[in-house]
Amino acid sequence: MGSTPASMRFCMVTTFYPPYSFGGDALFVQRLSRELAARGHRVDVVHGTDAYRLLGGAEPAEVAPEPPGITVHALASRAGFLWPLAMQQTGGRPSPHAGCGPSWKAISTSSTSTTCRSSGAPAC
Image (tube, rainbow, N blue to C red; front, side, top):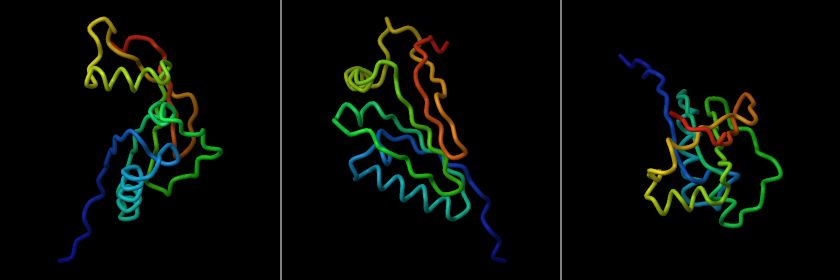
């Protein structure tokens, strides 16, 4: 009779997420993530910062903390703006000459977010 649904975990994978965004789909993902967290679910958001920078986005002065239940993982490749272009040109598949692809390592962490950067080492 009126039992509470179990808490779930969600992972949002997106190109843009505030403040590394221009609006649109990034705001939709943020609002959806916040609503899920408000309902007691845990949400991980994984996004890249390279595409934002490639399109001329200014580096945000400050990243506002997310509400409890949301963890943001901002990824940045050592290849910089070349990474989004390579992914777009290959359909997201690495070249057979690219080894196993980059591995990512955290460059800064806090209780609500992790920023990662490619170490350039093969991931396999």
